[in-house]
Image (tube, rainbow, N blue to C red):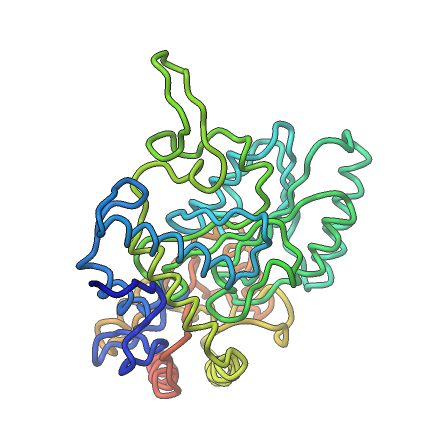
Length: 416
């Protein structure tokens, strides 16, 4: 008789938060896609022999997979502090989750966000949304939001819904945003708030109750579970009355003979039409369990030490300029963007890869308004006219080492 499947169990010999990699290759591009945690790989390997349909079969394999899928939903919801009546909806990633929420907004909803967001938190929102300027410090973000919501409530019907959409940590600079304070301001003005936690969740605990946010969007591939799953977690009322994000099997409770004779189900299944990404869900749940069992404070301290080493090293290179939105001492996660004076960023990234086997990101990081603003600010702050029009980004996390950071700094020094 097969043993009961536990989506979060890993072999005793493994270290769940070890990450996979290729010997000799230095991966400093975690903010784009983090490497696979051992916990995720183990969970997928254990389930693969049993892989079958979810919610659609009576056989032993299907029953086991259905159990694993729903256990994963519960595990992930618990990890992020979901409330008892919240929905935990599986998506492909944060972009998918925010697009789902955008299509579930009640008619007349105004969305308020900042110009410093990733495209995933800029582009899905309806026309008429309010985009606030990038603030110069976290307190300024709170003040600007309070002013904008006060003005918005004076100028429109107080019955119309308002949603505030903010990031937890910038994917360009790593700077952390004052989420709890922004949530208090939003709720004081009768608005809801959604948190893009794609970059924050891999580096720090994220809890809906503690932060008092209404919705949360996360990507598995940034949280060491690179199997194509993300989640939207949040209040059920808007989601249960909105048309399904994906119309198809599993989203219905009844389909009649007429073309539009359909009754949609409620709950997460309403927005999970089609065969779900079982392996992605199980992988993400396994990482959530491993992180939940870990000493997050110790992990954060290790990361902050590496981050300080990287930023101090960059500051010592006169031809390298760090990008920032807030002051140099603002709290941040393990992400640093910078430019090398006199060098095209794509050329630097290619040289790092081919000559030093170091992988970093170059470009505008799917946050064009913010990145372009920061490049202009960097030129003004330094007085240099030889800064390139795009940037480089180094990002760290589990498995990153001081030796890797030093290799990057040495390679950048050679470019002088």
